Image (tube, rainbow, N blue to C red; front, side, top):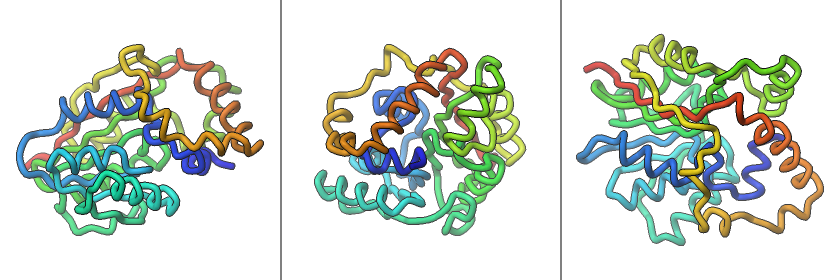
Length: 239
């Protein structure tokens, strides 16, 4: 079972570093004011998309995993949110016209892709003067080659980007990108909210394959957290 399948089976809403607390802090800090059309790529179970919609933004949420989208739609129904556009698709070929959105929002999604290809698509669908807001994992300290390979293989990553490599990626796509805000991989400031724990499908842990996947994740990431940082990138498409 791969990592994305594990998340979908468990119903993890905010798998990125810092959880939903970090999401709200990032959005409050990085989103401009006004009537914005926002594309969330890799929306998962829809927690962030619903939060954005509940705050009055026009939201389109995309994911390539049908089970994630099913859970996202159910979340929106429970919360009484009816105006999110849910789209199944790939970040490599976003099914939208050029210059469609004011903001593209991603959280620990681009790292699972060929980042330069994804960044080029983000740039394409953003309006002139539009903004990319992306919270990503960054390699902060060189790690032993054996561990690096294990993590790459487990998450099916092309590579683990350093902060400078992330900046190069976004700038090569055409963005004007400032230095990111950098935080520890697990920040004491960003602990999981009670609702995030309650939403987990705990019964799924009875599946030995899922239980083994959780243990493997802990061994690969939590035990190696000193090598990583969480970075909030804000990049602008020049108008």
